[in-house]
Length: 194
Image 1 (spheres, rainbow, N blue to C red):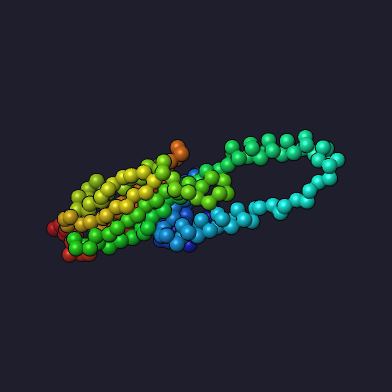
Image 2 (cartoon, rainbow, N blue to C red; image 1 turned 30 degrees about the vertical axis):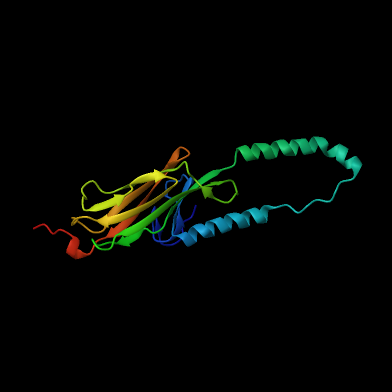
């Protein structure tokens, strides 16, 4: 899957991209507009694949085509079972600036797309948000959930560096993906060591 400009692995600055590992079971979408676009593209693909209605066959040809019809139905049933499943990790944003008086709100959603059908919420997806081990000044609440997580990112104390990189992990269907969220902290809230 090719990535639009501005994407570097999972560090996307907008639009959507994959995680660059060659497994296309997940893609990452930044912002709501991009997700709507994916849904619209999925719908257009469905509309573009519809076959025009066929004319009614003559009675003699109906009898001759019954074995072929059964064969086609079996093939279509097999294809339905083998439809590709793709998950979408949607982040409301991947860059924030926070202060003690101005926290940020991050919405994370997981979507599931089966074959060419439009995406639906993936309530089975486990989502976690991790802060760096050595970074104690940032709080994220809640830090996990299923399907959708609405979390607040706040600055509880001075931090040792800026930006602070949060790691969002989504897992479903035996696969997972990680995305990074950059949290900028103004210089007056960054500890300086001498």
